[in-house]
Every structure is written in structure tokens, then in C-alpha cells.
Image (cartoon, rainbow over all chains, first blue to last red; front, top):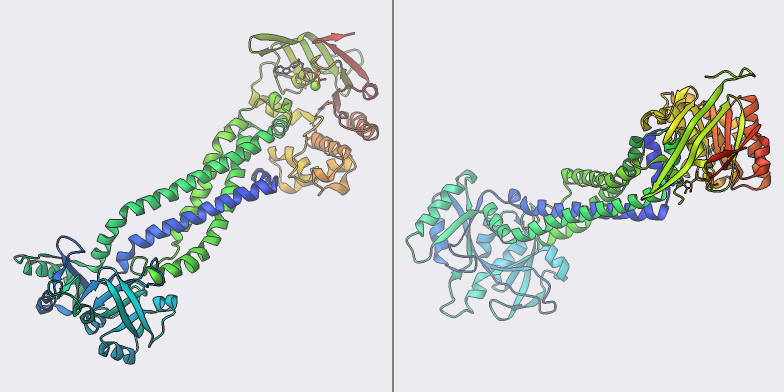
Length: 388
Length: 231
Ligand SMILES: Nc1ncnc2c1ncn2[C@@H]1O[C@H](COP(=O)(O)OP(=O)(O)OP(=O)(O)O)[C@@H](O)[C@H]1O
Ligand SMILES: [Mg+2]
């Protein structure tokens, strides 16, 4: 038996209270890890972006269109290997309007060249190229919606109103996690032919594959310079920068998530502090006896702080042990499959787990400082006189 | 230490000891000009009405508190001017404590409770354990070492407390109503044990009690009334 051992034994004293407090610490640690992983995954998405891909959009905003011929002009620039154009179509499943997935109109052959990470069978590829209403859907989306190759589906347009009929020509998987597995790609011509003359031949953005990843900066400048004197100017950036600029729109949310993770762990500290304070009050008499037999105020403080540290450590460990499967297997898989472009990798980082555990211990100990000082400063005779 | 006629020296000597408490502006003279000596190896009882200052006096003798006036020598040490830290060391070395209730830590076994004071001494773990086992044997609880306090009767708990009080081999044992919570039978066991510590192990015992039967076990009985010794 050691002094620390005695301190740790104290957490066995009130089983219900200890269990509840451990649960609070475990849950706080688990959610701290979850929220931090959200932030990490989101901000590190750009690291997972393809380095050999650049995107060109309207200089002013995402929502403004470019003439389709810009795509051909970009293809002329030396160092550009392949070019694809795309429009955000924004259709929804009429059966479930709240169910979000991306629908993108594009040039099928060019898309598969530019997104070499997208994999499908040669037969399905061919079928998609040949069917004007064909759609290529991500495996995660197909699984979620229950779509199979050969199915006929109807979606409701929002940006382009009306009912749109598609045939599932193929289902794709990806070789890397940065490409979304929940997108529906379909033939741009199918959309374009239904539009009025004024709306026709406009594209949302243009993607280019370049032969030398190191030249992406130079080529991007070249593209923007080329259109610099035209009516519609462009801004071109790497896929990483594009993701970053998307992130910019969500930076307030990220800050909020960050803040929530901190606030949660602080609340945990307050709850642990309250538990410890309750225990200290109940044990006043025991502290009196301990002091009588020769223990010093510093020993009493160590008992209280040691107990808090044990609560922080055990609770935190439970949080970490549960956090790994919760984040990686449950939340992570769902996010990687359905929002892979935003959360290309959603895994607990050891650093985050260690930080969560460390914070649980440090804050638990910190929250016990006041009760510990209170217990240590008791006068022996007063502590002995106080009953219960 | 002052020598006396029978050759034994005073282990406890109070000289004009006063103790005053303040409750806000109200002054409470709990002990007044108290002179008292006790011989080494004696078994003495303190009796008196509730509120007469028995516990206060015992706490002074045990070094738990300091007097407001007068001087106080216990086991050869002048306690009246000593700092709290030094008194803690004095208590650990010289005094064994038995209180009426709340003596044991409920999360520790009997053996661990007895071992507790030894954690303050720099002893190897095996030695601590051995001494704690010996102390439990003295009180007749060698078969209850791994029991927790809630698994023991009130009398057994007090015997564990007595084992803890003697484990570091102090000269003096102070007991504040050690039988106050016990039935007659258990109380007698505790008193027998205290008597044995006094006669066989030569411990000086100072015991506060309300119980005349308990006081009879002591060789000397002091009566306290309103903070003064009655004759
Ligand atoms: N720390 C203290 N602060 C204020 N007053 C105190 C303090 N300790 C004791 N007193 C007061 O001193 C008086 C004597 O108290 P003490 O506990 O010594 O009595 P006692 O003889 O042991 O009584 P009992 O038989 O009820 O245990 C009481 O009036 C008590 O309220
Ligand atoms: Mg009393």
C-alpha cells in the first residue's frame, strides 16, 4: 500500500457516484476526440487532394457560369493533359428531399480521364458513354439508395426544374479516399439540350489534369492570364486550394466545433470538481483522523488530487477505448463513404487521443485544486468535531 | 522530567493551562489555569459533564491543539509553542489515537488501516506489513486482516483502531469515549484491551469517558467541571 494507492481507493467509495462521474469523463473525452477529428479531417482534406489536378471557375463566384469553349482553350495550354467540364445539377430524390447527394453533369469520357481515381468496369464505362441518360453513381450512394445497374430512376431538379429520368449505367469505386463515393455523374449533353438558348453551353467549372504536379502554379496563372482580357475572367487553383476555399465558407462552423470541444471538456472539469468537493465534505472526519495520526496538510491535498487524477485517467481511458471504434468504425465510415471529398480520411489521430486523455487528467486534477486546498487547510480539531 | 516519590517520572505535565475559544465576539474560556500531571505507565480517566472541556483537554495533551496560556510538556517535549507541522511529527511518534467513531477508512482493509501510520515512516513494505500483522494479533484480530470496516462489528472496529494506535509503538494512547458507541460486552473487551496495553506494554493511557464502569478500570480518575479540575 502507498499513499497514492490510498487516494485511488477512494474512488471505490461511492460506486454509483463514481460510475456517473467516470461516465461523464468518458463521454466528454469521446466527444472531444470526435469533434477534434472532425476539425482535423476537414482541415487536412487538402493534403489528400490530387496534386495534379487544377480547377477553373468564374472569377467572382462558384455560382456564376463560364462558356463551355473555355474548356477547349484550356486544353491547348502546354502541360495540360486532359480537361473536363462540369455543372452542379442539384437534383434530389423525390422520395426523400432531405437526402443530400451530389448530382453533377459532365463530359463522361473526359471526366474519367481527369478523375483517374474513379474505377468501374469497361462494360459499364462503355454503357455510360453510349447512353445519353446514363448515370455513373458512387458505390456508397448506390448502396444507400438501393440502386443497381440497369435501374431507371427519376430525380427532381432544383436548379434545373422538372423531373429527370436516368438509367444507372455503372457504379464506381475509387482508389483514393479524396474522391467522393456518393456522387451521381451524368451526361452533360442530356442537360444542355433541354436548356433555352440563353442558358445553353455554360459550364460551372473546368477541371484540368496536368502532366507535372510541380507546374500547377504556373499553368493556373497561364490559364487566368489567357482569359484576363475577356468579358468573363477566371480563377484557377489546385484541387487542394479549391477544397480550402470551400472550407473558408465553413470556417465559422469549424471554430464553433473547436469551441464546443473545449467547452465540453471544461464542463466535465466542473462536474468532476463538484463530485470531489462532495466527497471532501463527507470525509472531513476522516481527514481529521488522518491528520491526528500524523499526516500533513500536503498529504491530504495529495489524497484529494490523486483521487481526481484517477477519475480523469480511468474516465479518459474509457473514453479513448470507446472513442476509437466509435469514430473510426461508426462515424468515420459513414463520413468517408458519403462525404469523402470533405472528410477524405476520418480516423482518430493518436495525437488527438493523447490530448483528450491528457486534458481529462489535467482538468480533473485542476478542478480538484479548490476542494484539495479546502481539505488541507482544515484545522485538525475542527475536522474531528465535525460529524458527517 | 520531575521525579516523584515512587520513582516514576511525569510523562504529562500541564502548568496553568488555559484554553479560550472565540465564537464571533463571544469569549469561551473552556479550560482555566489547569495544573495536571500524569505518570509514565499510568491509566487515567477524565470524566465530567458534557461541555466541561474533556475533549479539549485531551486534544491539548495529544498535541492536536495548543493552549491559549500556560505550558504543557508531553513525553519530554514542550508543546505549547510548537508549530502544527512539528506537532504532526510529535503525534506520529508519541501518540496513539482512539476516537469514538469514524476511526477507520472504509476503503481500506483492517490490515491496511493499521498500516496507515507507518506510511509516514520510511519503512520497507514488508516490514510495515509485518508490524501491522503483529498489532492485529495483539488485539486478537489476526483472522480479520482482509476484512473491510463495514464487515466488522463495532467492537472489532475499535480493536482495529487500537491496533492502529499501537502499530508505531507510541508511549501514550489517548482515547476519547472509545466505548461510547458499544454495548456492555464489546465495551468490556475494549477496556480489557486497554488494560492489557497498560500493564503488559507499559503504555500510558488517557481516556475520556462518561461511563463510570469504564472509569473504574483506570487507576486515577480526574473530574472536570466547567474547565477546572474538581477534587
Ligand atoms: N474548536 C472549537 N471552537 C469553539 N468552541 C469549541 C471548540 N471546541 C470546543 N468548543 C467548546 O468548548 C466546550 C467544551 O468542549 P469539549 O468538546 O471539550 O467538551 P466535552 O467535555 O468533551 O463534552 P462531551 O462530553 O459532550 O464530548 C464546549 O462548549 C464546546 O462547544
Ligand atoms: Mg468530548
